[in-house]
Length: 332
Image: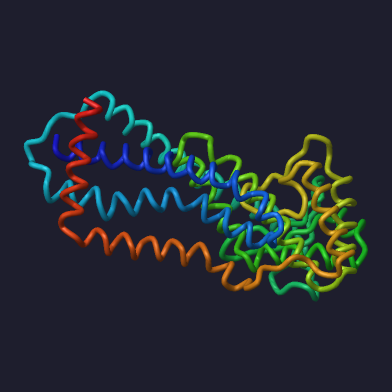
């Protein structure tokens, strides 16, 4: 019963801390969303990513450094039974973790399978604007996408190559370069896992906002070259959007598409933004792009450091165990 109670507490705490922190992050985003519109899209992307992965990270740190040590040190082996309420929370949390693992594995295998299918009939081509392997494929969907996290490849549909001009194609490839430099495919995989672990849907708005900001950031990355590139990218977006079959969506789960994940309204907003960039002469930039990119890792590192410092004090673990006892009594 000692081990079962400990496991139940870990799972229930994972669900409770993650859900509460995610609700707080979603509420916080409502207050800062409008002020951040004046910042660069890359800055918004990094902040949204931090707000999305922060709750699961906070839950894991809290459990690893506070709950588990206090339970092991201060909980007597002859402990109370697991109540129905606590068991229900633990089961719900376990379902969330299972869904996250299952969805991640399913997306990975589906992407890998489709990648093999594409490569079997693909023709490798070369472009001056990219250094990653680039392939031409026959596909009904107007694909131009970077597929892969650690070994990225660029795939371009034949109809896209035939429709876009050389300038438009170069601008589109520069957009995909923005996704590569930001490691957006890896981040998209993490966000998928965060979505399922939490169970409750309050983080969906942050997921949509991140996806939109990531596309705008990649647009800004391409448009940094010059105003003409911004106009060529806007033209490429319009042409590709017109080629997308009604109701169709891109088939690869984990990839950075030029057009395919967003709705038509998203493409229109991006085109307007690119026209504004071309008119102004340059996009909005973060004061320090390097600092913006390391913000999530630095923030999580600071959180971990503070947590270790606090958890090293014995009185803290005593207090945490007291809170555990109260929680178990409340759920009895």
